[in-house]
Length: 194
Image 1 (cartoon, helix red, strand yellow):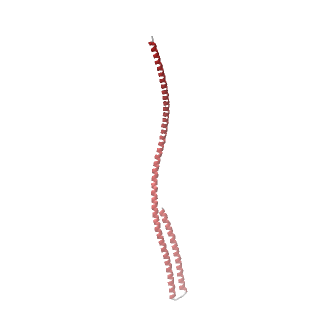
Image 2 (cartoon, helix red, strand yellow; image 1 turned 45 degrees about the vertical axis):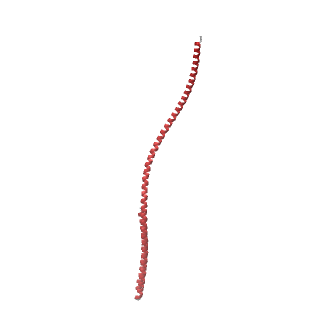
Image 3 (cartoon, rainbow, N blue to C red; image 1 turned 90 degrees about the vertical axis):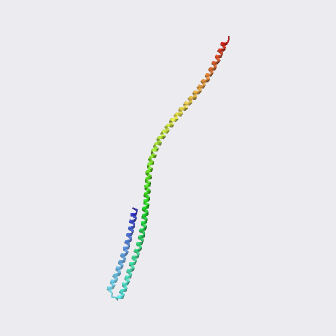
């Protein structure tokens, strides 16, 4: 599309220069026609000798030749410039086409990367959902562990309390056993006495 636009602009520029050249040619043609008319008037209105008329014809021919040479020189210069500009524009168009193709390739690559990222995004979304579910499960397990720890702490307090009670009972039993042993010894001593 860029190449077409550049070609259209170049063609428009050439058309404008061609119109200018045609205008110049029309001006030169009018001038030549005026000179020829003057020559004709001069030829008809005055009867001069052949040498004077030949000199005027030679002068007019020289003038016409100068005008045509000038027109040809200008047209040749313009044509050369236009051809050089055409080559330059063609090179720029080719470079722009390569640049557009490279940009298109990059855009295609970016689209492929975007598709991959969308796929990864879906995977991440599923992972986030799974992670939230796992987080809830971990919190539930942590709550259960906290309850178990509280229950164990209660059990440890009860065991300690029971150990103290057992120790107290054991001390009382030893004391009672000691008293019983003393009583038995006293009873035996009384039974042994006559």
